[in-house]
Amino acid sequence: MMNPIYHIIIITSSSSSHLSHLGGVEREVKLLTLLSLAGLLKMGDIEVNEAMAAPADAEDKMKKKRRLGFTVALMILVDDAGGDWPMIAHAPWNGCNLADFVMPFFLFIVGISIALALKRIRDRWIATKKVILRTLKLIFWGLLLQGGFSHAPDKLSYGVDMKNIRWCGILQRIALSYFVVGLLEIATQGAHVKELPPGRLSIYKLMLGACVLVVYLGVIYGTYVPTWQFTVRNTDSADYGKILNVACDVRGKLDPSCNAVGYIDRQVLGIKHMYLHPAWKRSKACTERSPYEGPFKKDAPSYCLAPFEPEGILSSISAILSTIIGVHFGHVLIQMKGHSSRLIHWITMGLGLVVLGIVLHFTDAIPLNKQLYTFSYVCVTSGAAALVFSFFYIMVDIWTLRCLFLPLEWIGKNAMLVYVMAAEGIFAGFVNGWYYDDPHNTLIYWIQKHIFFGVWHSRKVGILLYVIFAEIMFWVIISGILDWLGIYWKL
Image (cartoon, helix red, strand yellow):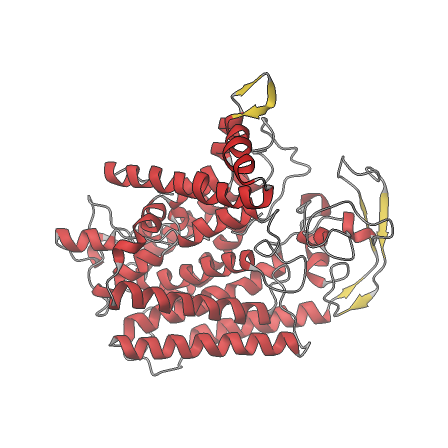
């Protein structure tokens, strides 16, 4: 899965006008472009258009081309090494592991970038058309990469039965948040205060956030979930083809089997169009090898074999909150003057969100749960994103240690390429297509076996080192070469 991160980047093409002045944040744009995580959403390609952008000199252009591939690299790490290191993979149900921070970090940066890139677009109709177009492109790529068409890197085949296509996914969730918050930002241009008092959110963002939260909580706790059934679709299971029942007939439950998030997805999307490998299959209720994957217990509940959509409808509505918080941080960057005032605001709010989320979780009020995208999960992950953002702000803008982040910058400049080729396994699938004698005897297999597993005599250590040095570092080098050549893949 993954869950992947993606940033919207402010356009800095050498052949176009550049965003030089955004309410006095010219110096800080370099931080955003450094932190903007993915050419996936290149909001720069939302083309903060020429009429609103002032030209910049060559030095400023180079500064604004800095981007950070931190979350993209993190996504590769948790996706490819998480199976052997469960503490960095997605939590089976309640809880929050390293992988569970990736998606909220993407959405948070999407929000920051929306605030900056849409700050002074004068023609709202043009901006709206561009937002709609980018949304459609994201949905298209999401369906292509995660809908089931690509079987990379494990299977050398392509194609999906439309009766079983997966409608939701990482990019679709980002598209929804981007679309809703982007249109609100366009509609409310000129309505923001010039100087933002500490702790104050735009009334429009507060209203949207409140509506999202009320709808989410009302539905997740108020929806009646009846008993349901499904057909086992895992061909490796002894129960393949059987119809199993899951007893529910409850309201307000947040367990894997009877929550409203899954119920709504089954009713709207259809159970055949949902993700077949949910993280809960690694839970203690399902397998004795938990938190690792393994054979199901003989007395495992029937839902262990059922599909579940981690990027489903209701949870994606809740995910809009992460983007709204990011927009607020973008407004602080624009409207507050001085490093100290910004950092005090960001760190205070970040710590407050983390503490609130932890309290809600450990008092059993609202558990931390990425699959349901609960409010406590929004608080903890958004607060963590705020603190990480503040850390990079200090490192890049105050201490000017940009050279330390060049590898991440290179990945960020071609994040769409790295996401598709590395995180989605397209390049690995291509390499695996060239095998010797046996389909499993490939270059990737040989490198893993003889250079990493064999040397360290441990698959667990070997796979971690392989991901870091043979995957992430490989794409750092490729991205660096492409940056040197001035080649970028824009969505």
